[in-house]
Image (cartoon, rainbow, N blue to C red; front, side, top):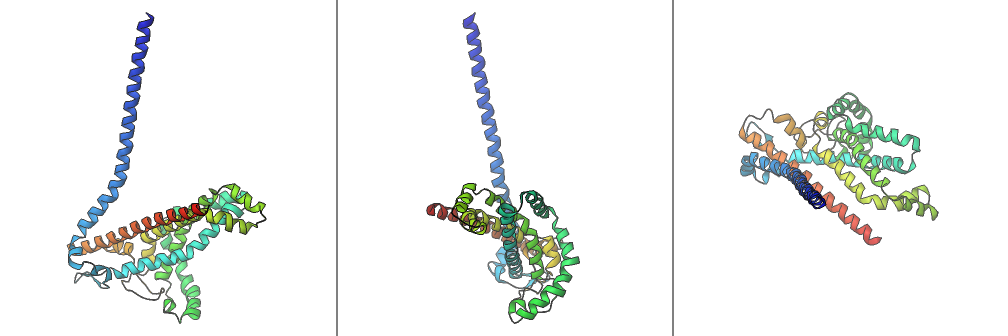
Length: 323
């Protein structure tokens, strides 16, 4: 009887082990499928964009990148004004947003009283939840008059001798779009930078204070060097959002396909031209040209992400060698 019971128990244990191994294999297969799906989606997007833009690629080639004429009636398409507008507005946004974001991140992580850290951090993150069309409407209703009547006249008065700041104050254009983008990407850069700074070991801060460092010296020499790679990644994330933003930029940039040295002049971006003109595209060449613009935008975002990963890893390696 004991032998039969033990053999029955052993058989149940073997079946349970086989069942557990089968469940593990099924779980592994499901996770592998999810991982392959993540890889397949961007690959399918690229293949579809290449297929859709084949006509424009065959007709215009690399001249599409340097062409300045966008005339759907004559089927003449050049993407340089859109590339230029996207780069200029994104750079303006980064130049304005990074100092504010880093200041907020430092304040929230090291300097703010504990009773206001969470409420203030929540308010900053809440800015990221506002739809972009709301930012665009706010920009038209409030930001544009302020820029036209206050900011741009001052910049033109003192810096108008530079081509970058010449022209009449319009209140819309590449500068206005860049300001709206800066406000939109501040929450992203601030949140990621704050989390990176909070992840710096407290021992680093205590060691700096023990050596007689002030609060600013502690942040400068103990916190920022350790968080540098994460901060760079946060800036690149903000830049990626600025590159792909559509509605707010469309409502503020002016939507004029022209390359201009002045940031006060109207411009156009790659995301805006796709949103504005895709529904109106009536010919195959027109659709193909817009698809090629989308392919360019996808490529720029991909290159920036790869550059960010390389920059973060190289910065981390340098810090590890110094340590």
